[in-house]
Image (cartoon, rainbow, N blue to C red):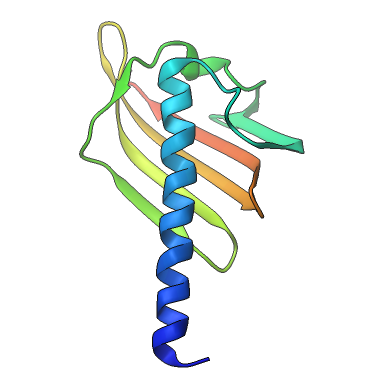
Length: 116
């Protein structure tokens, strides 16, 4: 494999992982996770507490600001999102890490801070 092929493959994988994260974040806003492919052994935590999908801050988020950051590790199949979420009467800083195994999300780790 040439360096250019390796870089193209890495770019494609990066974009694939970002697409999965964007789909997950859209599901959070829509409060509808039916289109998301979760692994049977899914582990979901928010601020270090295990919760079922759809619980916690997922219930209160109305939207995410467009200005956000993605951090992608194509070797391990993990992606992080950091941005601001709009809730009913305030904003929250939110970080979400997904671990992707093939096409399935096996881990969702969410950190949030409302400045309280």
